[in-house]
Each structure stands twice: as C-alpha cells, then as structure tokens.
Amino acid sequence: MMQLPRVAMLLAIIGTLTVIGSPQATSAQTVVREVAISSMPLTTDNNLDPITLVFTGYAPSWWVASNIVDWSDSAYCSGAKSVNGNEYNYTMEHPDPGGIPCYGPRDHVRIWDMGYSPVFGQWSIAAAHHEHTLCNPLCHRVIDSWEKAEADVRSAFTGGHATASISNVTLGNTGYYQGVFNDGNATRIQLRASSTQYPEVFNENGLSNRTSWSVTMNGTTLTSEHPAITFSELNGTYSFTVGAPQGYSASPSSGTINVDGAGTHQAIRFTVPWSTSSVTVYPSSENPVTIVFAGNVTVATPSVHLTTTAGNTRLGFNATEIGPGGVLNVTIPRAIVLSGSSVGVYVDGTQNDNTKVGGDASHLYVYFLIPYGTHSVELQFGPPTAHILLYVTGGVLAASVVGLLFIVFNKKKRRTVA
Image (cartoon, rainbow, N blue to C red):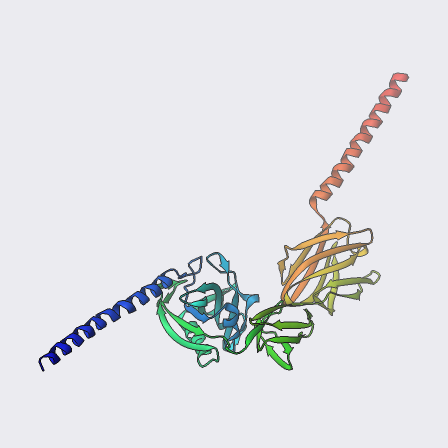
C-alpha cells in the first residue's frame, strides 16, 4: 500500500521531465526556422520593395505563377528589380475592376526562385504592391499599398487545388518603402505538386500583355493569358500543338513530350513574321513615288502621307507592333530626298535613338525600332547639315582663291615677258 504513492510520485517526476523537455524540442525546431527566416532577403536589392510573400513546399516560381487565379503576365510593362543580384523569374498583375492592364489601378507581384531549402522545400519569394498611374504631366506609377496586394495574392490562392496551407510569418522588415508603410508581416503559402502525375509546363516568351495562347496535349486544350500553361500527366510520350494568336508564329508549333518520373519544361517562342508592304504617294508638283515598308511591324498604308516644304520632307504614318518590340525598315526613293539631308525619326513626337540610315544610288534606307502598341511615326528629312554646307562652301572658296592666284600669276608673267 505504501508503494502506490512512490509509484505516483515517480510518474509525476517523469511527467514533469517530459513537460520540461517538450518546450526544448519545440524551441530547437523554432531556432532552425528562425535561422532560415533570418537568412531570407527582406527587400529587393535597391531596398525599395519589401518581401511580402513566401511560397514553400513545392513552390518553384513557374508553379506559383501557374496557380495565381485570374492574374496575367506583365513582363512588358514591369521594370527591372533584383534580389541577391538575380532578376525576377515571373511578374504578374491583376487590374482593379475598371482598371487598365499596365496602367492600373492594379496589383503587381514579382516572384524570385530561391532554390531548395531543407526547411522550406522548393521555395520562392515575392514582393507585391498595389499601384496607380499618375500623370503630372509625365505619367508614372505610384505605389499606394503593400498590404492590399499581399491580401489579394492570399485570396487568389485560397481554396486552390495546389494550396496546402496559408499562414503568416514575421520577417521584421517593418518600415516605409517608397513612402508607404509595410507592417513586416508576410504571407506564407505552402503549395504541393500532384502526387500521382507529373507537371508538363509550357513557358511562352514574346507575347504582349494579356494575349491568349493555347496548347493541346493528349486530347486536352488549355488556354491562358499567363506566361505558363501546365498539364499533369502520367509517364508516357505525348504529342502537343501550340495555338498561336493571330499575327504570331510559334516555335516550335508542335512536338512531343516524354514524361518519365519527373516534370518537364518546353519553351515556346512567339514572333511576329517579317512582312513587306508598299504604298504609292503623290507629292505636290512631282511624279508619284513608291515607299516600301519591311519588318515585323504593321504599317497602316492609308495613313501614309508625304509633305515637302522649303526643302524639308516629312513622311508620316501609323505603325502597330503586337509583340514586345519590332523593327521597321523604310525604303525611300532618292528623288524626294536631297543628297546629304539630315534624317530624324520621331515616334509619338519623341526622337527615336535606335535609328540607322543607309542607302545606295537610287534609295535611302531608314531602319529603327518600334515598341509594343500603335504609334504615330514621322520621318523628317532636312536640308544638308551645317557642316556639310560649310565643307562645300569651304571647297568653293578654296577653288576661288586658287583661281584668283592663277590669274594674278599669269598677269605678272605677261608683264615680265613684255
């Protein structure tokens, strides 16, 4: 009977030691996690954007981008931004209702791959903000919130088939960035890959913002405005075809994918085919001439107009580039441009610095770059530049001096003979 209290006391001591030991194990686990968090980049390299999102589990950037519901690629309207010297892997946007892509108001997120970590798995991080465009008079984007964009990203992943859990993590990067306060609390989103199938990811490059494209594989067609389209398939060999938007060519446009125990990636490059067009213009009091346009930029030929005033020739037209950037080569007959004329190219009223000029005996060639969108273009051909005129005038003057000296010398020679 006296042994029972001793047994009870022993059990109590063991229980106490167990209770004391439990926090120590949790504390060690917490230390490992805190060490991992402390080594995490807290801002972009220029210290202008705080890190506000952490993706863990199975979360390479392409998988993160594939699972942001209703967000689209914004690679053509996003500035450079680096973390640890590396540029972002994906940049996505979500305009507000009534907002305009690229201009906003919109949410904008940049995602960086962080590789593999024993704590976080295949992980990535992101900086997200909400912004609007302000023109006074030059237009520029103004960030008005870090927290709203973070919350909208969290909402986009809530209930997603790849979402394992969503939680908060304190990064300690509290402060004002670009004049807007960040609370230092990031959202952690843990993702998972398919357990029975492997991801086949098609990554596009070359499409403009919010341009739909598609891939058909194994009888299934997926269409997206995102930079990646992802299938999930069992091991095997599958054929695919790429649906290119109107005006684009895809490379490759078809092929096969071999799935063998791991995910695969297939890069798709979209380009605008090179084309040639021409238009006949009728300058005043001159014979009609033909202007030729060649490149992957479309020129609206009805918009082409040519004017000549006091030795200045102006060729204007509207040009549209549907990719991120294109080239245009304009061929102009020498008959309408004075030899040695200065050449200026203006796109939407701003001089284009990416211009090259060449030619032969019959034609002048003007080559320049056109950014995405529809633009008003004007080529200006002025009189020969001042240094050319000075050179010509100097030559004439020198010839005159030589001629005058020759005449004077001849006169002196005649007097001497006489």
